[in-house]
Image (cartoon, rainbow, N blue to C red; front, side, top):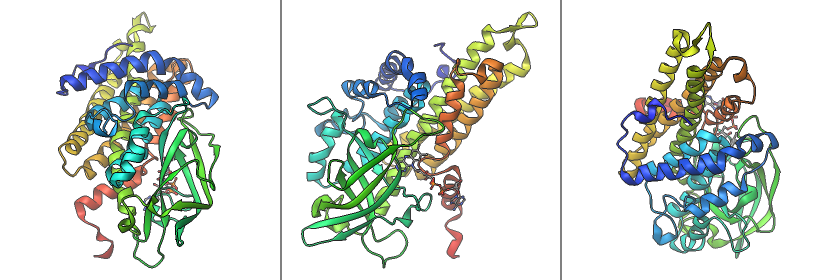
Length: 402
Ligand SMILES: Cc1cc2nc3c(=O)[nH]c(=O)nc-3n(C[C@H](O)[C@H](O)[C@H](O)COP(=O)(O)OP(=O)(O)OC[C@H]3O[C@@H](n4cnc5c(N)ncnc54)[C@H](O)[C@@H]3O)c2cc1C
């Protein structure tokens, strides 16, 4: 893989962040990239890649060592997602969903007992039998997507347990997960966004069913499926954060998504970088009219624009990650980073295919896969339209009731 101009830009990484980048870049190149085409074609999850990430300690990358993690910062994590996605969007997505959505909310919002019970195993990522123990996150439902507060899944409080019935859609990693943190309605009366509780459920619980894997346009190697709950009994202490958090779990999910957007932005960035790498290499080598096609401004200006936009996306993502690491509000910046990077990824992949010409339209150069994988970044963890709502409401305030 050729080193490219955007890496020459100074992003002020620390020695530790640089080391993490080099480690994950090597891993991506040697372990993830060789199977990227195959898992896309076969609609297959790359179990070995996740076991490798577990061995490297990357599955608990941002969790403190005292809970079994590696204790690195958000920026290191964003770099890890970026490097994985640069060679394989499916692996980047599964990894981001595990860390940001399946694991982090249990660490951030769980009781001490819940954290001790689940977080070390999720960081470890593999059980004693060698099976993956990833985390997953169940917010979306067939009838509740962008308006996730429309949750229809219900948890009814009984004398000594919760009785859960309902269905979740588009859930990432469930066939390889040990836990699922999910939302259920516990009260019909309160205002929008209230009356919803966050629960931590184990996938092995009777009544908890993972449906068949979805057959998707892109990120085909990632595991996406519906979940159903049929008279599933959970103990009373399955409420994330404890019983005082009943009816007020929705906000925790919104905060989780805000953090997750940095990683989906990083995924888009990696995909854009991967497509750019292919296009710039080709522009150097492919000759037409007795000259490398990179000598034609129609091509070289595309390369320049791609490099500039990728650098801008990287700045937005690293900035949002640094705000989070500094304990500052990063909601709008995370949305901007995700929105911009996902649009850059789509545009870069389209232009990279143009630079590659006919071969770009085939599977040989992998950019068509990157284009399909990039589309997810404009949909998952809030569509581009929802990001524009978040950003504009942060600027203008919520004018709906003005
Ligand atoms: C591969 C994949 C993995 C996913 N993983 C997970 C996961 O792990 N956990 C999870 O809970 N969810 C997951 N999701 C779900 C994802 O977050 C939702 O698909 C997304 O939030 C959009 O919801 P929807 O698909 O129901 O679309 P809808 O909400 O039905 O939107 C359809 C269209 O209407 C637009 N729209 C809706 N409301 C507005 C509005 N107010 N203003 C303007 N436009 C609007 C949308 O932007 C979109 O273009 C995943 C999705 C995919 C595709």
